[in-house]
Image (cartoon, rainbow, N blue to C red):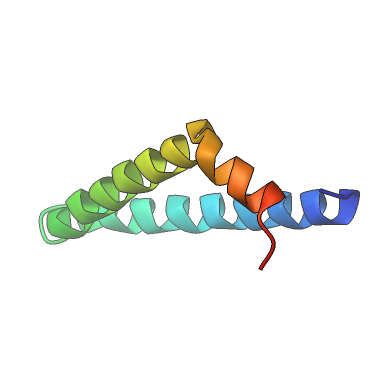
Length: 70
């Protein structure tokens, strides 16, 4: 991964965090009515973290992405 790619991913990550913070702030302000959206957001976040964790620890995916030609 080169420097520009790291900068790009970092900027996208910061932007995503800012967007999530704005979304959560709006959900807290409209609390009684947007509780469903808050629960859905937490569920999606939990599943996303699970997928990222599984991908990081899976050595088989790393092997195929580095050694198998298309």
